Image (cartoon, rainbow, N blue to C red; front, side):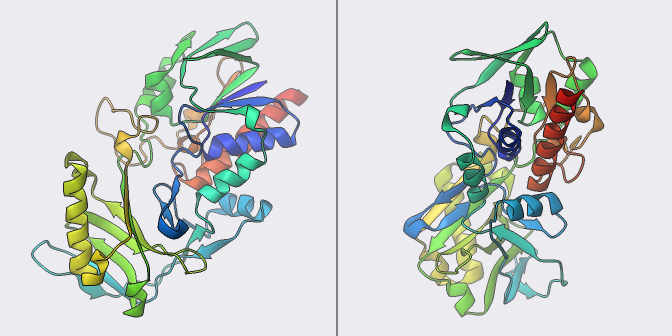
Length: 350
């Protein structure tokens, strides 16, 4: 049996591929939900808001391939109309022309639709939530994985969670190579510094004003903001990022500053929202763990050390950060899952 730690995109896709091959597995997930850094929340009128991974492009071939395989639809990010840029806190937002760029896409029904589609391909008994792994023990030809609740035994274990998390939170017996641990502790976890916010509305008032809903700002709190209506454009929202420094404020103060900025940019109607939602990812214990020193974005993502086999092939390293292409993104998560399963199949045939 293969034990997969983490029920994010890479973990669930790995499980789906293993099931296709008839290889038994268990997924152990520390959270009370699946998806990891993919988290679509449903608000008033079932309007979806993306609190995690959202956009992808034509260059993300691995993600596009799995969407095609699962017969899932996606749609182009709405960008029609005026785009605003706020260069200084002392000046109002100004309309700008942005260079023609390749389109970005979103998954129909929300990014979590991909997660839920994969989950439905699995047996519920094989995906266990609230299973926080504390120790992994390698003995002879087996692997024992210890959680707060029970012990699982298998042939191999796959670490489908960010390297810094397993390096800091899981005790390995025997110890992993020091060079691997050093790199893992110096690997940036994508999204861990992000704060995402979303507002839902009863109409797309910005579109009616020929505004795209797009804002780029150097002043904050919002740094990027976009139209977030659904594929059918009958659920209305704006969604984006705010400066991570605002995590120091309490939630009410942070919200007030966001609303003030949105109203100043898009007009009084922006204050007439239905829902306000935010996710401060640095407060998600199963995403964020403090670094020993400052890391730059994507530091050590895709490092070749993660592609090696350890403990005589019984330990495999997954998660988006370990991917050789587009590490830290959904495309990387898909690639690494496919890569890991190919390794397992090859080893079985040897």
